Length: 381
Image (cartoon, rainbow, N blue to C red; front, side, top):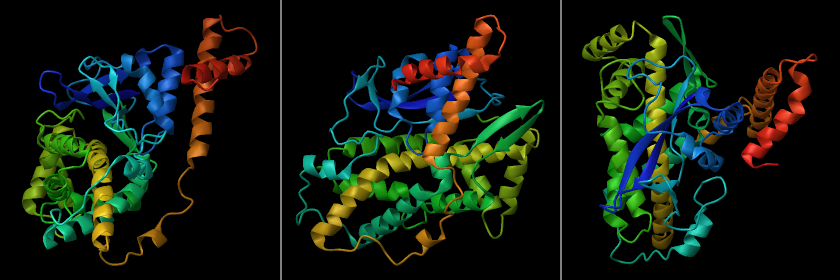
């Protein structure tokens, strides 16, 4: 498993936040660390478990075995650990406010206890900004409920010269996620993320997490423009170009001829691999959705309190969205946790069996020892 972790850190020279990406090939780790890290990644959905912080020292800023073009054969995952901040030397810094739950989410009840937001006559959104935030809040809540947002876009593997894309989500779930992301991404949409985030920064001058929202917005815009995105595209284009091409050819009623030519150009650059284009596109919008998620929590919470102060509704219209969820189609967290732990313990037991000279009886006799080592590594013993 190849991992790329985008980390927010404080530059001591400027006092400002910056982002860097650190990398890890789990195949380079000891059997116990490999099993532990892969287990943490496999059981994580929207928020990566903070247990991964224990293994921060294993990630390096050098790309290592990851190619500048093309993709590793055993899968590649990019992520950001919510609310993890470090200094320029890689040491974790305390969050700006002690209001986080154990799984990394902001606890808005605790947040209200720590923040005295003073809504008065000087804080008044224009009608346009208010309606934009209403639309954004509605679409933001939908985005976080989507299967692809929770489960991720899947994996891309290489089989000889050919690539194969596999996912836990269906075509229908992918389309649903893309259409919601499109509303948060497109400039002409009323609830576009960039427009709403700038409105928040302009109006919420006393919000303690304002700087973090600004930094996540900056990261979002930099990722879109990046000439060398850390997703290692096997073709030459920016993430924005890729998104525009795919959305306007695969999710538009009447694809433009210019966009179809651009899609063919991308396909030619990656040997006509639709799987590669699909994975890069979905991984890109999933990564950008993480930026929206990290900034959007503070925006939606602030807007909710603004609406309460002014006795205003926070959602425009009525949606039947919740009644159309794919209930029962996804593996539960507990089932995924148990399955992943069992699989990693079995692989670790096999490594222990080999290290002991492959004694008669097979690796099954070392399952208990492997489980014990894995629990100890994860701090669960």
